[in-house]
Amino acid sequence: MGLNDSSPGAMRNGRGLSDQWAESVVVRPRTTERHITVHKKLVLGFALSILTLIIVTAVAVVLSVRYEECGARGSPEVGSRAPGGSSRLNGSRDRAGDRGEEEVQPWRSSRLPGTLRPRHYELRLAVCMDNFTFSGDVSIEIECVNATRFIVLHTDRLEVDRVSVTAEGSGSGRFSNRPGGGVMRIHRHFAFPLNQMYVVVLHRELKPMRLYRLNISFDAAIEDELLGFFRSSYTLHREKRHLAVTQFSPIHARKAFPCFDEPIYKATFSLTLRHDQQYLSLSNMPVESSVLSEEDGWVTNRFSRTPRMSTYYLAWAVCNFTYRETQTDSGVTIRLYARPDAISSGAGDYALHITKRLLGFYQDYFQVQYSLPKLDLLAVPNIRTLLWRTGA
Ligand SMILES: *[C@@H]1O[C@H](CO)[C@@H](O)[C@H](O)[C@H]1NC(C)=O
Ligand SMILES: *[C@@H]1O[C@H](CO)[C@@H](O)[C@H](O)[C@H]1NC(C)=O
Ligand SMILES: *[C@@H]1O[C@H](CO)[C@@H](O)[C@H](O)[C@H]1NC(C)=O
Ligand SMILES: *[C@@H]1O[C@H](CO)[C@@H](O)[C@H](O)[C@H]1NC(C)=O
Ligand SMILES: *[C@@H]1O[C@H](CO)[C@@H](O)[C@H](O)[C@H]1NC(C)=O
Image (cartoon, protein in one colour):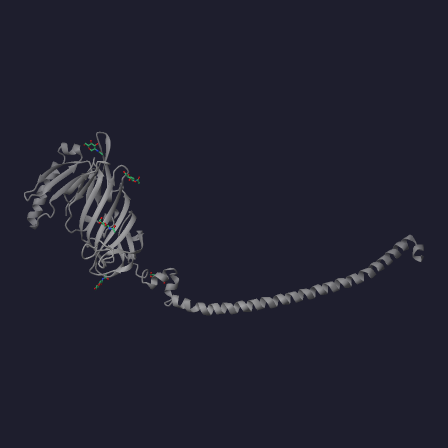
């Protein structure tokens, strides 16, 4: 009650004090409880963290043991994979390197490896003058000089479709179960544009002294640039006319067909040209057979086999020219092919006359007969000279 009799201020104070006290009294156990709970939490925290630490350490130890075991098991592999140290950096090439494939890489040389020698080219081309494209297939008879798993030859800007390699049997060689002949399995084939090469990697080696046949089919454009198999144009009766001719010397045959495009690789060539019958086609050799297809109005001209020669001597043309001809005393026919208006106006007669005299002169001078049955001169309009001739 005394507490109630006190002044309101004192009461307030007393109350306040008692309240404070009361509070403090009430609070104290609370704070101790808090301390206790804090302690409990700390302990629990410590316990938990220690437990965690133990678990983590245990896991780490287990893991490190496992890791060491793995490392111990893995290290011999690494060692075997990189015995020389250098092949480890070449990564995925290692496995192929075991078989000696990528270590050689003959296509990285600017010259052909010399392990193979072409003997004969069977070349067939379909020339489309409407959209200036041509598609072809070449079948090259190859003699193996040194054993190799790589066939390296030249291509430039040709899109290769199909590749096949067969071993030519001693007899007909047609049947793959014959011991002498059969299809050679191709590991992979790819272009190496840096050296204008095409590479065929085989599963097995080609054997020296044996003959093989490499077939490649390809597509390409007839470019407007005076190299390889290119196009040219002229105007006749106010109409634009086109022709397609070759310029292979020195290294542009590879733009027209896959070949061993170095002068030392001499071979014979059998060319077959297919084109619209509105055009005529010419090559080094005379036309052996000419077949007109009633279906599409295309003509297929097969030319005689050439003598043994380098790729850059090969030449052909698809044009709508007419010609004038003469014969040398030794019986070689010389023809000048040019645009019809030039022929009818006699513009080419001088060239024809000069060529006849020159050929006679050279034959007398060198005492060597001109080796081909004919000589064609072609007046290619854009070049404005009689640049193109057939024959060696
Ligand atoms: C990778 O291999 C090539 C031959 O294929 C070799 O010339 C080159 O030195 C190798 N690179 C390394 C880093 O060993
Ligand atoms: C060009 O024309 C021929 C037929 O004349 C066709 O077979 C070929 O696909 C054509 N090429 C392109 C690239 O259009
Ligand atoms: C390769 O081409 C030649 C001539 O075109 C042909 O007779 C031969 O059957 C072809 N070989 C293969 C495997 O395609
Ligand atoms: C091919 O083998 C002969 C020995 O038979 C060797 O003299 C020549 O260097 C070899 N050529 C190539 C390109 O490996
Ligand atoms: C080829 O020339 C003949 C006559 O000279 C002409 O009728 C024909 O249309 C020409 N063809 C082409 C494709 O230029």
